[in-house]
Length: 255
Image 1 (tube, rainbow, N blue to C red):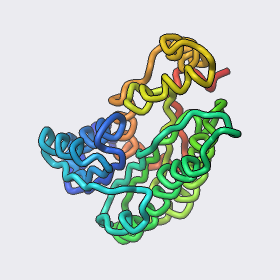
Image 2: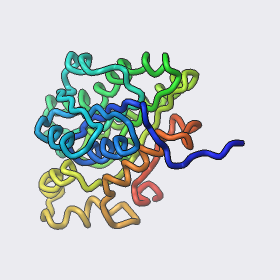
Image 3: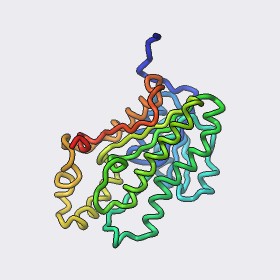
């Protein structure tokens, strides 16, 4: 058996990363560009995308509202690597959860990945190679109170990813989920006030007392850690890895 290069190069590949203006998406876009891919950085934050493209070669900004199906349809389709990362959060009891917010979270976190995959698969199938990486969450496999929309969307993304894996395997396409716990991102930082309100605790108690309470490793995950796993899933050492969910939860789910 030939040796496998564990340091993948992605020269000649085109990657599309959603939610690329900050947090995990920014780390993934930067990582893939560093490995040689041309990266289509998709986000609604035009200023954030411009700053990202100015700081890193090989990144092309694509401003897009991913809750708008027509806008998704207008994005480039000749994509070899698709990283579905964009997401938002809302923390509220079900009886107080705004239905329009529930719908928006599902459109962004579950419906948009479906539309993007549907658009990109024909190119991947035609070339006989493709990588779909879905940034899910520990909440794709576990539930927490007050996050009905996010938990529902991430559970749905897990199922979608597995179907993509089964259909894509004969065509050289893999599909996997990455399941981090709380990552040091603006999305997590914005939750602190809502978590404090719904749980009835002070804001400075949220990280240690709520976010990290189920985990054995008592720290937030860094975006670069997630990006490194994305790189592995796009490289040759993961060619037989598909339909999987990679937990990066500090031992949360070991209970």
